[in-house]
Image (cartoon, rainbow, N blue to C red):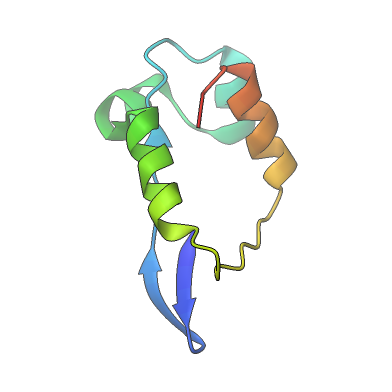
Length: 81
């Protein structure tokens, strides 16, 4: 996610959610994300939810690429945000 103010990128936000369990091989095959990446770089889902809540204010325009994929992935692991 990027924060853009007056046409200038002021922040980049890119995090993995550590789901606390091994990824199915198919997910790794599709995304290239490994269990090691989640263990070493992953963040608790509550941290991600808090961060997004802070950034998505009433005047925020959110544009997403392939959001349905991400949404389905979140539903698959029952991640509550």
